[in-house]
Amino acid sequence: MHALFQALLTQPIFNLFVGLYNLIPDVGVVILVITILIKLVLYPSTNKSIKAQKDLTELQPKLEALKKKYAGDQQKIAQETMALYKEHKVNPFGSCLPLLIQLPIFLALYSVLSSVFSGAKFDLLYSFVKNPEQINSVTLGLFDLSKNDNIFLALLAGGAQFAQAKMFTRKQPPKTAGPGAKDESMTAMMNKQMTYFMPVITVMIGYQLPGGLALYWFLSTGITALQQVILFRKHDGTGPSATTTFINKKDNNVIEGKISE
Image (tube, rainbow, N blue to C red):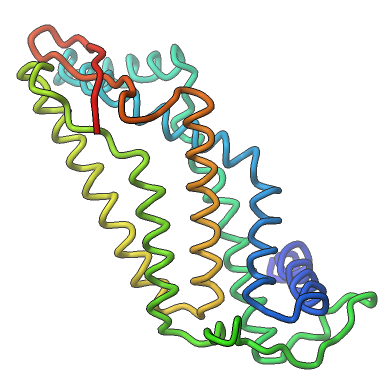
């Protein structure tokens, strides 16, 4: 398994990294180029993931209404939930695919950075890739990307994670939504907690990783956030006056409403 992983991911990324470094002798720029290339390859699946995640967020009020309408009947809730997914053509697992793909790439990049900065594994180079013998781990004359504990890059990664998650935060419902809006407020509150919790975890993990990985995390998340902005504007004009949905507790129906930031 290790040999297969190395042949399919680690070695190609290693050769791509070294080949780019031969052309652009700055590891930070090389990581940027590699991140863009990976994002281009994953663009279709990432687009599907973003759409699936947004669709799930927008279905939350209707899912909450189902739980109230069939309270105590878990089988009926499950059946109606699946019917709701089918009606709106939502795949509840659609947002997981890019994460599953990104994890092995992240691990491969970790191995590559460990190798290039230590000068090891140059024997993995393809015959047509020049061996630079040594790679300077300092980018822009400022950051040593081989070192851990880079709080600046860790904070950048956390900030990008926050910006990305913030786009999926459900807005608090207006008072005119009725008493049932309380449940929607609780959902929005939980989403908000996750919006702030995940960036903190990102900073903590990024601080313990080599600076090169923290930089990749920041760039990758930032590009994904930009992709979300473009996709949202293209499909439904997400903005200050976007339409959202709320639960009316009185009859367990879902109503539409306009919100403002």
